[in-house]
Image 1: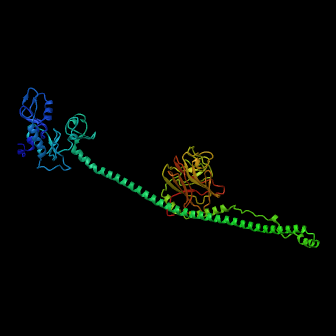
Image 2 (image 1 turned 180 degrees about the horizontal axis):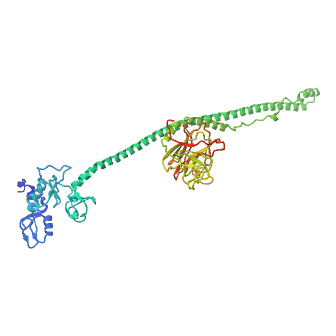
Length: 542
Protein backbone atom coordinates (compact mmCIF):
# COMPACT_ATOMS: atom_id res chain seq x y z
CA UNK A 1 0.00 0.00 0.00
CA UNK A 2 2.89 2.30 0.74
CA UNK A 3 4.31 1.63 -2.67
CA UNK A 4 0.99 2.52 -4.24
CA UNK A 5 1.13 6.02 -2.80
CA UNK A 6 4.51 7.16 -4.09
CA UNK A 7 2.82 10.25 -5.53
CA UNK A 8 2.19 11.66 -2.05
CA UNK A 9 4.15 14.83 -1.33
CA UNK A 10 6.72 15.13 1.45
CA UNK A 11 4.41 17.40 3.50
CA UNK A 12 1.99 14.45 4.03
CA UNK A 13 4.75 12.81 6.06
CA UNK A 14 6.10 15.89 7.88
CA UNK A 15 6.02 16.53 11.60
CA UNK A 16 3.94 19.64 12.34
CA UNK A 17 6.47 20.70 14.97
CA UNK A 18 9.81 20.45 13.15
CA UNK A 19 8.22 20.54 9.66
CA UNK A 20 10.63 17.81 8.54
CA UNK A 21 9.88 14.25 7.43
CA UNK A 22 8.99 12.09 10.44
CA UNK A 23 11.89 10.68 12.40
CA UNK A 24 10.79 7.83 14.76
CA UNK A 25 7.11 8.84 14.43
CA UNK A 26 4.72 8.26 17.37
CA UNK A 27 0.94 8.75 17.67
CA UNK A 28 -1.08 10.49 20.40
CA UNK A 29 -4.43 9.33 21.74
CA UNK A 30 -6.14 11.94 19.53
CA UNK A 31 -4.65 10.34 16.41
CA UNK A 32 -2.02 12.91 15.45
CA UNK A 33 1.57 11.98 14.62
CA UNK A 34 4.85 13.63 15.63
CA UNK A 35 8.54 12.85 15.83
CA UNK A 36 9.19 11.28 19.24
CA UNK A 37 11.85 13.88 20.03
CA UNK A 38 9.65 16.80 18.94
CA UNK A 39 6.54 15.92 20.97
CA UNK A 40 8.59 14.94 24.03
CA UNK A 41 10.43 18.28 24.00
CA UNK A 42 7.13 20.13 23.39
CA UNK A 43 5.43 18.59 26.44
CA UNK A 44 8.56 19.14 28.57
CA UNK A 45 8.09 22.89 28.08
CA UNK A 46 4.28 22.94 28.74
CA UNK A 47 2.32 23.18 31.96
CA UNK A 48 -0.66 21.36 30.44
CA UNK A 49 -0.40 18.40 28.12
CA UNK A 50 -2.22 19.13 24.89
CA UNK A 51 -1.99 18.18 21.24
CA UNK A 52 -0.04 20.78 19.21
CA UNK A 53 -2.46 20.27 16.28
CA UNK A 54 -5.99 19.98 17.77
CA UNK A 55 -5.21 21.41 21.21
CA UNK A 56 -6.93 18.45 22.95
CA UNK A 57 -6.08 18.48 26.65
CA UNK A 58 -4.92 15.41 28.56
CA UNK A 59 -5.15 15.07 32.31
CA UNK A 60 -1.94 13.11 32.49
CA UNK A 61 0.99 12.83 30.14
CA UNK A 62 -0.17 10.46 27.41
CA UNK A 63 1.66 7.29 26.56
CA UNK A 64 3.12 7.50 23.05
CA UNK A 65 2.62 4.64 20.66
CA UNK A 66 5.17 3.89 17.92
CA UNK A 67 3.55 4.21 14.51
CA UNK A 68 5.30 1.38 12.66
CA UNK A 69 3.42 1.89 9.41
CA UNK A 70 4.14 5.63 9.28
CA UNK A 71 7.77 5.02 10.21
CA UNK A 72 8.22 2.78 7.18
CA UNK A 73 6.53 5.25 4.84
CA UNK A 74 8.60 8.15 6.23
CA UNK A 75 11.82 6.20 5.66
CA UNK A 76 10.75 5.57 2.06
CA UNK A 77 9.85 9.20 1.57
CA UNK A 78 13.30 10.26 2.86
CA UNK A 79 14.98 8.26 0.09
CA UNK A 80 12.54 8.73 -2.81
CA UNK A 81 10.89 12.15 -2.56
CA UNK A 82 12.80 14.97 -4.30
CA UNK A 83 11.67 18.51 -4.94
CA UNK A 84 11.88 18.84 -8.71
CA UNK A 85 10.65 22.42 -9.05
CA UNK A 86 13.78 23.97 -7.43
CA UNK A 87 17.38 23.83 -8.58
CA UNK A 88 20.14 22.57 -6.23
CA UNK A 89 22.03 25.15 -4.17
CA UNK A 90 24.69 27.16 -6.00
CA UNK A 91 27.84 28.24 -4.13
CA UNK A 92 26.60 31.81 -3.63
CA UNK A 93 23.11 30.77 -2.47
CA UNK A 94 21.77 30.00 1.01
CA UNK A 95 20.80 26.32 1.46
CA UNK A 96 17.58 25.17 3.09
CA UNK A 97 18.17 24.12 6.69
CA UNK A 98 15.34 21.56 6.61
CA UNK A 99 16.13 19.60 3.45
CA UNK A 100 17.67 16.19 3.93
CA UNK A 101 19.66 14.48 1.24
CA UNK A 102 20.00 16.97 -1.61
CA UNK A 103 19.69 20.47 -0.14
CA UNK A 104 17.61 23.00 -2.04
CA UNK A 105 17.97 26.75 -2.30
CA UNK A 106 16.35 28.74 0.50
CA UNK A 107 13.81 31.35 -0.57
CA UNK A 108 13.16 32.86 2.88
CA UNK A 109 14.73 32.93 6.33
CA UNK A 110 12.62 33.04 9.50
CA UNK A 111 13.89 35.35 12.22
CA UNK A 112 11.73 33.57 14.81
CA UNK A 113 12.73 29.99 13.98
CA UNK A 114 16.31 31.01 13.03
CA UNK A 115 15.88 28.74 10.03
CA UNK A 116 16.12 29.16 6.25
CA UNK A 117 13.48 27.40 4.11
CA UNK A 118 13.17 26.29 0.53
CA UNK A 119 9.82 26.81 -1.22
CA UNK A 120 8.51 23.41 -0.11
CA UNK A 121 9.49 23.69 3.56
CA UNK A 122 8.27 27.29 3.68
CA UNK A 123 4.71 26.15 2.99
CA UNK A 124 3.69 25.74 6.70
CA UNK A 125 4.69 29.38 7.34
CA UNK A 126 2.29 30.37 4.57
CA UNK A 127 -0.52 28.10 5.80
CA UNK A 128 -0.42 27.69 9.59
CA UNK A 129 -1.89 30.71 11.38
CA UNK A 130 0.68 30.95 14.21
CA UNK A 131 3.55 30.48 11.75
CA UNK A 132 2.24 33.26 9.50
CA UNK A 133 3.09 35.68 12.31
CA UNK A 134 6.78 34.85 12.06
CA UNK A 135 9.01 37.44 10.44
CA UNK A 136 10.32 36.25 7.09
CA UNK A 137 13.26 37.95 5.31
CA UNK A 138 15.40 37.31 2.26
CA UNK A 139 17.61 34.22 2.70
CA UNK A 140 20.43 34.80 5.16
CA UNK A 141 23.33 32.52 5.93
CA UNK A 142 24.41 31.89 9.55
CA UNK A 143 21.28 33.41 11.05
CA UNK A 144 22.53 32.88 14.61
CA UNK A 145 25.35 35.35 13.94
CA UNK A 146 22.84 37.97 12.78
CA UNK A 147 20.94 37.94 16.05
CA UNK A 148 21.73 39.94 19.17
CA UNK A 149 22.95 37.47 21.77
CA UNK A 150 21.51 39.57 24.58
CA UNK A 151 18.05 40.47 23.22
CA UNK A 152 17.55 37.73 20.64
CA UNK A 153 16.67 40.37 18.05
CA UNK A 154 17.98 40.99 14.55
CA UNK A 155 21.10 43.14 14.35
CA UNK A 156 19.80 45.98 12.18
CA UNK A 157 21.73 49.01 13.44
CA UNK A 158 25.39 50.07 13.80
CA UNK A 159 26.82 51.86 16.84
CA UNK A 160 29.34 54.42 15.59
CA UNK A 161 30.82 54.92 19.06
CA UNK A 162 31.79 51.31 19.74
CA UNK A 163 31.83 50.27 16.07
CA UNK A 164 29.60 47.23 16.61
CA UNK A 165 26.30 45.99 15.19
CA UNK A 166 23.33 46.29 17.59
CA UNK A 167 19.60 45.56 17.71
CA UNK A 168 16.78 47.99 18.42
CA UNK A 169 16.66 47.06 22.08
CA UNK A 170 20.42 47.77 22.43
CA UNK A 171 19.74 51.43 21.52
CA UNK A 172 17.39 51.65 24.49
CA UNK A 173 19.86 50.12 26.97
CA UNK A 174 23.66 49.85 26.67
CA UNK A 175 23.92 52.08 23.58
CA UNK A 176 21.17 54.56 24.48
CA UNK A 177 23.42 57.65 24.24
CA UNK A 178 25.47 56.43 21.26
CA UNK A 179 24.89 57.56 17.69
CA UNK A 180 23.49 54.66 15.67
CA UNK A 181 22.67 54.34 11.97
CA UNK A 182 21.05 51.63 9.85
CA UNK A 183 23.41 48.90 8.72
CA UNK A 184 22.92 49.88 5.09
CA UNK A 185 24.02 53.46 5.75
CA UNK A 186 27.19 52.35 7.58
CA UNK A 187 27.73 49.71 4.91
CA UNK A 188 27.80 52.42 2.23
CA UNK A 189 30.30 54.46 4.31
CA UNK A 190 32.57 51.49 4.90
CA UNK A 191 32.25 50.40 1.28
CA UNK A 192 33.50 53.81 0.19
CA UNK A 193 36.49 53.32 2.47
CA UNK A 194 37.30 49.96 0.93
CA UNK A 195 38.78 51.66 -2.12
CA UNK A 196 41.33 53.48 0.04
CA UNK A 197 42.03 50.35 2.08
CA UNK A 198 42.47 48.30 -1.08
CA UNK A 199 44.81 50.93 -2.50
CA UNK A 200 46.85 50.90 0.71
CA UNK A 201 46.96 47.09 0.71
CA UNK A 202 48.00 47.03 -2.94
CA UNK A 203 50.70 49.61 -2.19
CA UNK A 204 51.98 47.46 0.68
CA UNK A 205 51.93 44.42 -1.59
CA UNK A 206 53.83 46.33 -4.27
CA UNK A 207 56.37 47.55 -1.70
CA UNK A 208 56.99 43.99 -0.61
CA UNK A 209 57.22 42.82 -4.20
CA UNK A 210 59.79 45.57 -4.73
CA UNK A 211 61.62 44.38 -1.62
CA UNK A 212 61.65 40.84 -2.99
CA UNK A 213 63.00 42.11 -6.31
CA UNK A 214 65.66 44.17 -4.53
CA UNK A 215 66.70 41.10 -2.55
CA UNK A 216 66.84 39.02 -5.73
CA UNK A 217 68.83 41.76 -7.49
CA UNK A 218 71.22 41.86 -4.53
CA UNK A 219 71.65 38.09 -4.72
CA UNK A 220 72.27 38.30 -8.47
CA UNK A 221 74.83 41.08 -7.98
CA UNK A 222 76.41 39.06 -5.20
CA UNK A 223 76.66 36.06 -7.51
CA UNK A 224 78.24 38.22 -10.22
CA UNK A 225 80.67 39.70 -7.69
CA UNK A 226 81.45 36.22 -6.39
CA UNK A 227 82.11 34.92 -9.91
CA UNK A 228 84.35 37.90 -10.61
CA UNK A 229 86.24 37.48 -7.34
CA UNK A 230 86.68 33.76 -7.99
CA UNK A 231 87.90 34.43 -11.54
CA UNK A 232 90.36 37.09 -10.33
CA UNK A 233 91.49 34.83 -7.51
CA UNK A 234 91.99 31.86 -9.82
CA UNK A 235 93.96 34.07 -12.22
CA UNK A 236 96.20 35.54 -9.53
CA UNK A 237 96.70 32.33 -7.59
CA UNK A 238 97.36 30.34 -10.76
CA UNK A 239 100.03 32.87 -11.77
CA UNK A 240 101.39 32.79 -8.24
CA UNK A 241 101.45 28.99 -8.31
CA UNK A 242 103.34 29.03 -11.59
CA UNK A 243 105.75 31.56 -10.15
CA UNK A 244 106.27 29.44 -7.01
CA UNK A 245 106.91 26.37 -9.13
CA UNK A 246 109.37 28.31 -11.30
CA UNK A 247 111.10 29.78 -8.23
CA UNK A 248 111.33 26.33 -6.76
CA UNK A 249 112.80 24.93 -10.00
CA UNK A 250 115.26 27.83 -10.25
CA UNK A 251 116.24 27.42 -6.60
CA UNK A 252 116.77 23.68 -7.02
CA UNK A 253 118.78 24.20 -10.19
CA UNK A 254 120.94 26.94 -8.65
CA UNK A 255 121.69 24.87 -5.54
CA UNK A 256 122.42 21.76 -7.58
CA UNK A 257 124.74 23.67 -9.92
CA UNK A 258 126.69 25.07 -6.97
CA UNK A 259 126.93 21.61 -5.44
CA UNK A 260 127.99 20.12 -8.77
CA UNK A 261 130.72 22.75 -9.17
CA UNK A 262 132.01 22.01 -5.68
CA UNK A 263 131.95 18.27 -6.33
CA UNK A 264 133.86 18.74 -9.63
CA UNK A 265 136.50 20.88 -7.91
CA UNK A 266 136.89 18.30 -5.15
CA UNK A 267 137.10 15.45 -7.68
CA UNK A 268 139.86 17.22 -9.66
CA UNK A 269 141.85 17.96 -6.50
CA UNK A 270 141.48 14.38 -5.30
CA UNK A 271 142.76 13.11 -8.65
CA UNK A 272 145.74 15.45 -8.48
CA UNK A 273 146.48 14.40 -4.92
CA UNK A 274 146.22 10.74 -5.82
CA UNK A 275 148.66 11.29 -8.71
CA UNK A 276 151.16 12.98 -6.40
CA UNK A 277 150.74 10.17 -3.87
CA UNK A 278 151.44 7.68 -6.63
CA UNK A 279 154.58 9.58 -7.70
CA UNK A 280 155.78 9.88 -4.12
CA UNK A 281 155.12 6.19 -3.52
CA UNK A 282 157.23 5.30 -6.52
CA UNK A 283 160.04 7.59 -5.24
CA UNK A 284 159.80 5.97 -1.82
CA UNK A 285 160.23 2.55 -3.40
CA UNK A 286 163.31 3.78 -5.32
CA UNK A 287 164.83 5.17 -2.13
CA UNK A 288 164.32 1.87 -0.33
CA UNK A 289 165.91 -0.11 -3.15
CA UNK A 290 168.90 2.27 -3.33
CA UNK A 291 169.45 1.95 0.40
CA UNK A 292 170.15 -1.77 -0.06
CA UNK A 293 172.66 -1.50 -2.96
CA UNK A 294 176.46 -1.83 -2.38
CA UNK A 295 177.38 -0.70 -5.88
CA UNK A 296 179.05 2.59 -5.16
CA UNK A 297 178.88 3.86 -8.70
CA UNK A 298 175.21 2.96 -9.14
CA UNK A 299 174.36 4.44 -5.78
CA UNK A 300 175.97 7.78 -6.51
CA UNK A 301 174.53 8.01 -10.00
CA UNK A 302 170.99 7.17 -8.79
CA UNK A 303 171.15 9.26 -5.65
CA UNK A 304 171.44 12.38 -7.73
CA UNK A 305 168.03 11.73 -9.35
CA UNK A 306 166.42 10.95 -6.00
CA UNK A 307 167.99 13.86 -4.14
CA UNK A 308 165.63 16.57 -5.53
CA UNK A 309 161.89 16.02 -4.69
CA UNK A 310 159.40 15.85 -7.59
CA UNK A 311 157.47 19.01 -8.41
CA UNK A 312 154.28 19.09 -6.32
CA UNK A 313 151.60 21.66 -5.40
CA UNK A 314 151.73 23.56 -2.17
CA UNK A 315 148.61 22.04 -0.59
CA UNK A 316 148.70 24.31 2.42
CA UNK A 317 146.95 26.99 0.41
CA UNK A 318 144.51 24.66 -1.31
CA UNK A 319 141.01 24.05 0.16
CA UNK A 320 137.58 23.02 -1.05
CA UNK A 321 135.10 25.61 0.14
CA UNK A 322 131.48 24.44 0.55
CA UNK A 323 129.06 26.44 -1.62
CA UNK A 324 127.27 29.35 0.03
CA UNK A 325 123.47 29.42 -0.26
CA UNK A 326 123.06 32.63 1.70
CA UNK A 327 120.50 34.87 -0.05
CA UNK A 328 119.48 32.19 -2.55
CA UNK A 329 116.08 31.60 -0.97
CA UNK A 330 115.57 35.31 -0.31
CA UNK A 331 116.27 36.13 -3.96
CA UNK A 332 113.65 33.53 -4.93
CA UNK A 333 111.16 35.07 -2.54
CA UNK A 334 111.96 38.55 -3.86
CA UNK A 335 111.24 37.29 -7.35
CA UNK A 336 108.02 35.75 -6.09
CA UNK A 337 107.02 39.03 -4.42
CA UNK A 338 107.78 40.96 -7.60
CA UNK A 339 105.61 38.60 -9.61
CA UNK A 340 102.80 38.85 -7.05
CA UNK A 341 102.94 42.65 -7.13
CA UNK A 342 102.79 42.62 -10.91
CA UNK A 343 99.73 40.38 -10.81
CA UNK A 344 98.11 42.52 -8.12
CA UNK A 345 98.48 45.56 -10.35
CA UNK A 346 96.40 43.75 -12.94
CA UNK A 347 93.45 43.52 -10.58
CA UNK A 348 90.52 45.74 -11.63
CA UNK A 349 90.81 48.26 -8.77
CA UNK A 350 88.66 50.67 -10.75
CA UNK A 351 85.72 48.26 -10.64
CA UNK A 352 86.25 47.68 -6.92
CA UNK A 353 86.30 51.40 -6.20
CA UNK A 354 83.10 51.92 -8.17
CA UNK A 355 81.40 49.24 -6.11
CA UNK A 356 82.31 50.81 -2.77
CA UNK A 357 81.53 54.36 -3.97
CA UNK A 358 77.88 53.33 -4.19
CA UNK A 359 77.81 53.44 -0.38
CA UNK A 360 78.60 57.17 -0.24
CA UNK A 361 77.31 59.01 2.83
CA UNK A 362 76.99 62.74 3.36
CA UNK A 363 78.96 63.66 6.49
CA UNK A 364 79.87 67.00 8.06
CA UNK A 365 82.42 67.82 10.74
CA UNK A 366 81.22 68.36 14.31
CA UNK A 367 82.67 71.59 15.79
CA UNK A 368 81.95 70.29 19.32
CA UNK A 369 84.62 67.63 18.81
CA UNK A 370 87.27 69.77 17.08
CA UNK A 371 90.49 70.62 18.93
CA UNK A 372 90.59 74.31 19.98
CA UNK A 373 93.15 75.34 17.34
CA UNK A 374 91.40 73.76 14.36
CA UNK A 375 89.46 75.91 11.88
CA UNK A 376 86.27 74.43 10.36
CA UNK A 377 84.40 75.82 7.38
CA UNK A 378 80.79 76.94 7.84
CA UNK A 379 79.46 73.98 5.84
CA UNK A 380 81.46 71.55 7.99
CA UNK A 381 83.32 70.12 5.01
CA UNK A 382 86.84 71.57 5.53
CA UNK A 383 89.35 71.65 8.38
CA UNK A 384 92.89 72.98 8.82
CA UNK A 385 95.27 74.02 11.60
CA UNK A 386 94.70 77.60 12.78
CA UNK A 387 98.02 77.86 14.69
CA UNK A 388 96.40 79.57 17.69
CA UNK A 389 94.24 77.98 20.36
CA UNK A 390 90.75 79.48 20.69
CA UNK A 391 88.83 80.01 23.90
CA UNK A 392 85.99 77.49 23.68
CA UNK A 393 83.45 76.24 26.24
CA UNK A 394 84.25 72.93 27.91
CA UNK A 395 82.71 69.99 26.11
CA UNK A 396 83.32 66.30 26.93
CA UNK A 397 83.17 65.52 23.22
CA UNK A 398 86.13 67.82 22.37
CA UNK A 399 89.70 66.65 21.70
CA UNK A 400 92.07 68.66 23.86
CA UNK A 401 95.65 67.60 23.07
CA UNK A 402 95.58 66.51 19.42
CA UNK A 403 94.30 68.15 16.20
CA UNK A 404 91.45 65.64 15.83
CA UNK A 405 87.85 66.12 14.74
CA UNK A 406 84.90 63.74 14.21
CA UNK A 407 81.80 64.05 12.06
CA UNK A 408 78.32 64.66 13.37
CA UNK A 409 77.15 61.42 11.79
CA UNK A 410 77.89 57.95 13.16
CA UNK A 411 77.22 54.45 11.84
CA UNK A 412 76.37 51.29 13.76
CA UNK A 413 75.70 48.83 10.93
CA UNK A 414 75.89 48.32 7.20
CA UNK A 415 78.40 49.93 4.84
CA UNK A 416 79.47 53.52 4.27
CA UNK A 417 82.02 55.38 2.16
CA UNK A 418 83.40 58.93 2.11
CA UNK A 419 86.21 60.78 0.35
CA UNK A 420 88.65 63.39 1.67
CA UNK A 421 90.80 65.70 -0.47
CA UNK A 422 94.36 65.86 0.87
CA UNK A 423 95.93 67.74 -2.03
CA UNK A 424 98.79 70.07 -0.98
CA UNK A 425 98.75 68.78 2.61
CA UNK A 426 102.07 67.41 3.84
CA UNK A 427 100.98 65.69 7.02
CA UNK A 428 97.56 64.22 7.77
CA UNK A 429 95.57 61.29 9.14
CA UNK A 430 92.07 60.01 8.45
CA UNK A 431 89.87 56.97 9.01
CA UNK A 432 87.21 56.05 11.56
CA UNK A 433 87.03 55.99 15.36
CA UNK A 434 84.66 54.66 17.99
CA UNK A 435 82.47 56.85 20.15
CA UNK A 436 84.23 55.93 23.41
CA UNK A 437 87.79 56.95 22.39
CA UNK A 438 89.88 58.93 24.87
CA UNK A 439 89.68 62.61 23.87
CA UNK A 440 92.20 63.97 26.35
CA UNK A 441 95.91 63.42 26.92
CA UNK A 442 98.26 61.24 24.88
CA UNK A 443 96.53 59.06 22.34
CA UNK A 444 97.76 55.99 20.45
CA UNK A 445 95.61 55.70 17.36
CA UNK A 446 95.46 51.91 17.09
CA UNK A 447 92.45 49.61 16.72
CA UNK A 448 92.98 48.53 20.31
CA UNK A 449 92.28 52.14 21.34
CA UNK A 450 89.31 52.49 18.98
CA UNK A 451 91.04 53.99 15.90
CA UNK A 452 91.38 52.60 12.37
CA UNK A 453 93.45 55.31 10.68
CA UNK A 454 95.90 55.89 7.85
CA UNK A 455 98.73 58.37 8.55
CA UNK A 456 100.79 60.20 5.95
CA UNK A 457 103.96 62.29 6.12
CA UNK A 458 107.22 62.64 4.21
CA UNK A 459 108.31 59.17 5.32
CA UNK A 460 105.31 57.48 3.70
CA UNK A 461 102.12 55.76 4.74
CA UNK A 462 101.56 53.88 7.96
CA UNK A 463 98.49 52.14 9.34
CA UNK A 464 98.86 52.29 13.10
CA UNK A 465 98.45 48.84 14.61
CA UNK A 466 100.37 46.43 16.75
CA UNK A 467 102.73 46.13 14.94
CA UNK A 468 102.40 49.11 12.59
CA UNK A 469 101.88 48.43 8.89
CA UNK A 470 104.20 50.52 6.71
CA UNK A 471 103.11 51.20 3.13
CA UNK A 472 105.02 52.63 0.15
CA UNK A 473 104.59 56.30 -0.78
CA UNK A 474 102.08 57.09 -3.50
CA UNK A 475 103.08 59.91 -5.87
CA UNK A 476 100.73 62.88 -6.23
CA UNK A 477 98.09 61.56 -3.86
CA UNK A 478 95.17 64.00 -3.99
CA UNK A 479 92.10 62.28 -2.61
CA UNK A 480 91.60 59.31 -0.28
CA UNK A 481 88.47 57.17 -0.12
CA UNK A 482 87.50 55.36 3.09
CA UNK A 483 85.12 52.37 2.95
CA UNK A 484 83.75 50.59 6.02
CA UNK A 485 81.73 47.39 6.19
CA UNK A 486 80.60 47.44 9.82
CA UNK A 487 79.10 43.96 9.87
CA UNK A 488 82.06 42.33 8.07
CA UNK A 489 84.67 44.17 10.16
CA UNK A 490 86.44 45.81 7.18
CA UNK A 491 88.11 49.22 6.79
CA UNK A 492 89.64 49.99 3.37
CA UNK A 493 91.54 52.99 1.99
CA UNK A 494 91.76 53.96 -1.71
CA UNK A 495 93.74 56.38 -3.86
CA UNK A 496 90.73 57.91 -5.62
CA UNK A 497 92.60 59.67 -8.45
CA UNK A 498 94.69 56.61 -9.31
CA UNK A 499 91.64 54.42 -8.55
CA UNK A 500 93.75 51.84 -6.73
CA UNK A 501 93.54 50.15 -3.35
CA UNK A 502 95.97 51.34 -0.65
CA UNK A 503 95.29 49.14 2.37
CA UNK A 504 92.56 47.15 4.14
CA UNK A 505 92.21 46.27 7.80
CA UNK A 506 90.24 43.03 8.03
CA UNK A 507 88.78 41.04 10.89
CA UNK A 508 87.95 44.20 12.82
CA UNK A 509 85.51 43.99 15.72
CA UNK A 510 83.03 46.86 16.07
CA UNK A 511 80.71 47.01 19.07
CA UNK A 512 79.71 50.68 19.15
CA UNK A 513 79.04 53.56 16.72
CA UNK A 514 81.83 54.54 14.32
CA UNK A 515 82.58 58.17 13.36
CA UNK A 516 84.57 59.35 10.33
CA UNK A 517 87.79 60.84 11.72
CA UNK A 518 90.09 63.59 10.34
CA UNK A 519 93.39 64.99 11.58
CA UNK A 520 95.00 67.83 9.50
CA UNK A 521 98.08 67.77 11.80
CA UNK A 522 99.85 70.90 12.90
CA UNK A 523 101.06 73.59 10.52
CA UNK A 524 104.82 74.19 10.67
CA UNK A 525 106.42 77.63 11.00
CA UNK A 526 106.85 77.87 7.22
CA UNK A 527 103.16 77.27 6.59
CA UNK A 528 103.87 74.05 4.71
CA UNK A 529 100.74 72.29 6.01
CA UNK A 530 98.19 75.09 5.77
CA UNK A 531 96.04 73.48 3.04
CA UNK A 532 92.72 72.15 4.39
CA UNK A 533 91.45 68.61 4.36
CA UNK A 534 88.16 68.65 2.45
CA UNK A 535 85.31 66.13 2.62
CA UNK A 536 84.42 65.88 -1.08
CA UNK A 537 81.37 64.56 -2.92
CA UNK A 538 81.94 61.29 -4.74
CA UNK A 539 82.35 61.52 -8.50
CA UNK A 540 82.25 58.01 -9.96
CA UNK A 541 83.13 59.27 -13.43
CA UNK A 542 86.62 60.34 -12.31
